[in-house]
Image 1 (tube, rainbow, N blue to C red):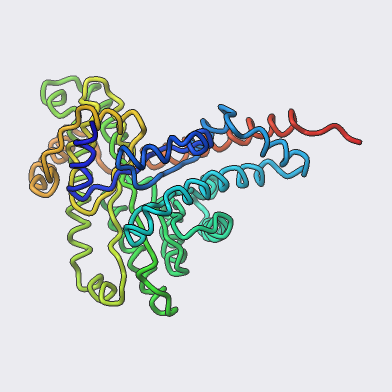
Image 2 (cartoon, helix red, strand yellow):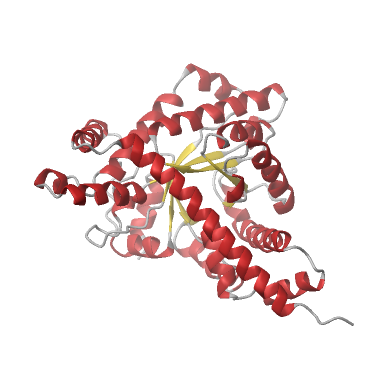
Length: 372
């Protein structure tokens, strides 16, 4: 059953699960996925936590204790989410040790309301790293303009980072530059560069969702022929940029000091259009030294009928560029699309966080002990 996932791993794609809940941890499900489905990491985001905590499974005792202590709702959420990340990190610790820190990692995101505040993002990243207190944690920082200098500073402090919400090739290059600048700071501070890891989460399916919506509005045969091609093209060109940056003289100097490459991570790989193969964003993005973080449905679909045929990225740069150029020629602005997606991404995570605040506050009130 797991041949496709095994082949994917053998091609150099680390399989991470894009989900976490206390039930998944306590039931043994996460351990089972690691053991049987080749899962070697976990990513979380505000939406994932909002769904997990709202479902209530396994959180009542902790929420009751927090209510008794009369903590603020913000503190309650941090205590709950960091507890889950810490426990997941402990389950993944053997993978972390076996891969010399490459995998076995769990990501936790800074408060999305701080996405446009550099100083607050840095402070929150430091606090989260301290709270979780596990070497196999990645702190997620969004690739907003304010996020870029935060990435440099946090990496420069020796904290490993998952850069999230990357949609555009230009922003991705800025992210890689921020990572290298952070490594240079860490080197100046005398830190061990080999202990600092990073992934750059390049979002996939949402690019097709936004561009295909605009192609459908045009309705021409040329527009219809381009449906479902933009996201993979965009990701392949991102990998080309990765190859270029991490073969540069600038990185070579850091490499000699023990630095590791920042791996591209394909995020948002669940297919949203039923017209497409449900494993498309896995099968078509196989390349060495990458990560694919998948919702469980995509993971199980890949296990069942994924088509892993070797590297499907590095030979496709010319076609990828042609596909994006064809979309642009139809009057669909790439720059506008990626800006809309970044803005929406921040807004969606902020909305999920606000929903989480409301539902957690209601639970704290419900479980608050009566006075006396």
